[in-house]
Image 1 (spheres, rainbow, N blue to C red):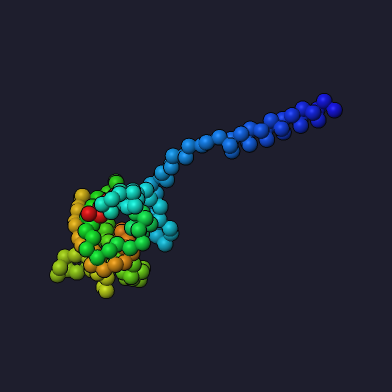
Image 2: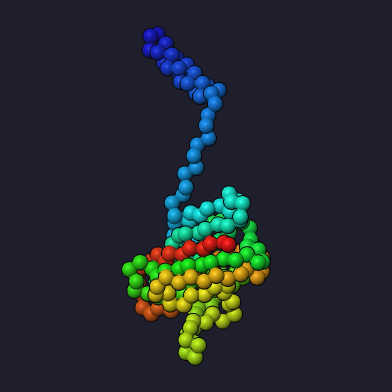
Length: 190
């Protein structure tokens, strides 16, 4: 009998604690930011970015790395990072990129709309010996950096309302490797 009274007392005490916690005012928990992630090809992208909704000037920054496998490509959905559905005509963007840590490869970095991002899956870059750059047949990037060997930056104006992507392309290498390169990119909406 004594042990059943003890169990009953513990259950009552626990119930009282849970009920008391529900009736007292609680302060909202601080949001814990998700860790900056890398992007694998054909996988959902994860990264930390400031929300455009939290600023009056509708500017947002994406400051992350995009992981790309050797001789492959990978894309990051810009809208997922800034909390917008589309980028609008007239918006100015500045894209900066740097070579992957450890070097060894010179990747291409592109900002493309949703249609060209789909096209990148079937179109590998071809070297244009006359123009001395990488060409993506049928793809019209908003911004394109070829063979990134040092920090680069460029500003462009969005022409059409679309979803946009930041893509890192290493599909111009020969050989095989299981290496995944982390390419630092920053996008600022002006």
